[in-house]
Length: 556
Image (cartoon, rainbow, N blue to C red; front, side, top):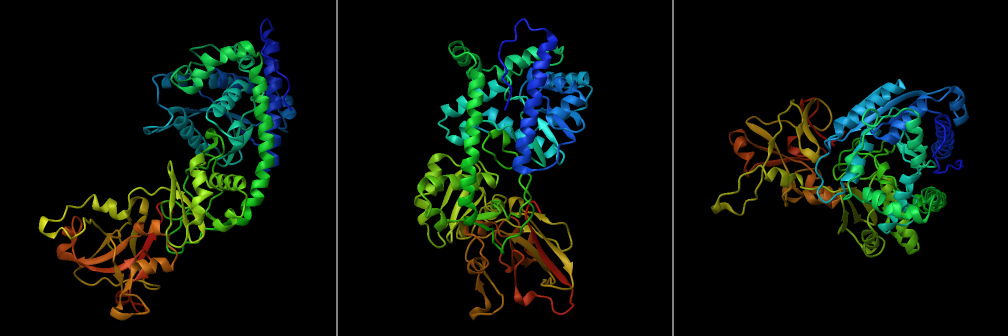
């Protein structure tokens, strides 16, 4: 348990203030270490990095750790002191960014440690909270940077925890949100720890001053922390003083409440996992290529931990399908309240934000009745869930299909040929680098003397197009007319309906019309659908050289 730390820091000698912070920090580190071992195991980290924002809290944390003795580290659970480092994320969102970076570097220099700077490229996100977007990109960057087994510490304290609990309550959050920030959580290949959640802001600030921190040199104010248009800043500077005047010590008591909720949540999680595991099955879509899980991170309940990465899992073509699917019948057999918890746990575990309550209601009620190949969809943010063939499929929303993206490059058909589709195409040159199809992956023709491969007829050019509809392909077994409906072929290899429009279609067109084919419809012969189905009349025989169709996932 955390030691009791009061807000009363007036008239205490500097050494006592620093000792008080050190004591609370040792207790917090030990608690983080115990939780980490209990949940994930692993060795004591030999590298501990402080996320140095350039603000006063993280600067005080860094200087306090720099003064740790070998005995302090041993008391916290380390047999030998770890390597200490600082890392600063430059968001580039405000005019204060250079000053914050300079302050982080100055504090690191005073602590005698290296400070690495991560430059973030945060695109505009209309409608999204700038606080949430900045936090999301910051933790993704830290997850990518953090070495395996290492820890990154943030200076979140009891006041931050109390604010988080209240903000979640104002948003109508349930147990997951009200549990606020965990003491530790997986982040990338390492761990994100918050050893100061039992320490008051006033204690940290007073100890920082006692350690010699100077505003303007070792720390500066982040304008986002005092902007009353932002929820947290408004709560901190307008609402909180009123609460503290009426309920002194509310920061510590609310932080303790969040801790109790976290304990309750762990019990709930165990029960939910017992419901979830029998409903999971590995993704099985043999008709699309698979690559490694992209470095997009995973979500925990807290927005700050959304970038925590999961073990590498196979995922398919965009919309990047989750590695597991969920059994609809099994979900329907559960009581309604447990359905919602199981669904959220599955979504979070696959690295997505939890759907809002209204979307959860649809998923655990109406959509459970979906049948056959209809594939109804529920969309929230950048995520979507499809119901198909008795299972739920989770992925990232596809946006434009391959055909739509290529059509945007094409000229409209002439007025007298309006029955023709607006269709663009890209040339695929045998033996040359793969053609970039954007989210639909990459397509190339690789020289081969074995396995299924195409022979390139003279005066013909390979072009890739997207699906328009009604395409037919000559494959074995030959049927009447020697062609088979491509839609049925894709169904036969379990390509979900919402992915079929991103399957590349390889055509042969006369070389004389290849240039025109890039911007308008030119008749030709369909010779391959993805890399699985090839025109039987163009297959090489024996050891005859040919070109193997290679379709790769966009993040293979």
